[in-house]
Amino acid sequence: MAASTSAPSSTTDPAVRAEAIRRGLAEAWGAMGASWGVAPAIARVHIYLMARGEPLTEREVREALGLSHRAASLALDAAIRWGVVERVAEPRRVGRRGPAGTAYASVGDHFRWFGRVIEHRKVLEGDPIIEVLERTAADAAAAAAEYVDDPELADLRDWLATFLWFVRLFNRAIGLVPVLEPTELERVLDLLARIPDDTILRLVRLLGQLPDDDVLALATGLSKLSPTAARRSIKLMAGVVRTVGR
Image (cartoon, rainbow, N blue to C red; front, side):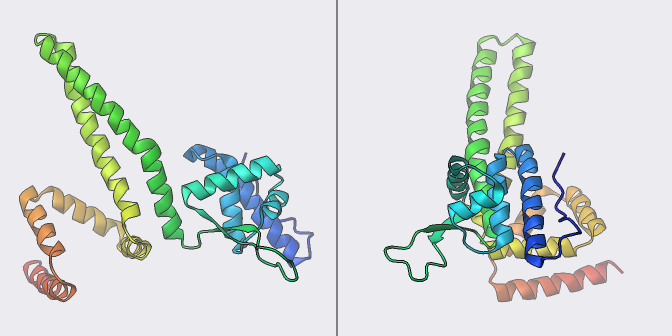
C-alpha cells in the first residue's frame, strides 16, 4: 500500500508540514518505482531531491529518508548513472577550511532527466532485446531453410520476423526522445496537450487512409524547409484545407 503524502493536520510548523509531505511523496514514489523497474531507494532519493529543490549532502539525504549510509550512497551513485542526479559542491560551508565537500542535486529540467531515463532504459532493455531477437530470428530462418517442408518452423520464422519488426519500431520511437533537446521535447508535448483528443484521432484515421508515399513525401519535404518557408507553406496549406473543406 502506497504511503500517504499528506502531513498530520495537527502539525502547525510549516517547515515540518512541508517535510512530512516530501517524505510521504518519497515513500509513495519509491513503492511505484519497483513497478517501473527502478529500485525503490533510487526513486525515493530522486523525488526527494526534486522536491527539496536544493543540493543536499549524503548525510542529509539518508537522515531524511531513513536510509543507511551504504543504501544512500548506492542509491545516489545509481541516480547519477541514470542521469537524474548530479554531484555539486557542498553548500553551507561558511567558515570551513579545505576543499568543498560533495553534495547532490536533482537535474532541475524535467524534460532533460526524463530524456536521460529513456536513454538509460533503452540501453539496458531495448537494445539488448533486439540483439536477442535478431539472433533468434536468424536461427529460425536457418532452421526453416534447412527443413523447407516443416510448417511449424516456417510459422516460427515468420512470427519472429514480424515481432522483431515491431520491437525495432518501438525502440526507434523511444530512441528519438533523448535525441531531442529538452526544449524541443517540451514544445512537442505541450502542442500535443493543446490539441483535443478527437482531433488527434481524426488525423490518425485520415493518415491511415492516405497512400504511404504521399504522407512520406509531405513529411520529407516539410523537414527540408527553412522556418520561414515552412511558415509560408503551412499558411498556404491551411488556406487550401479551409477552401476544400467547405
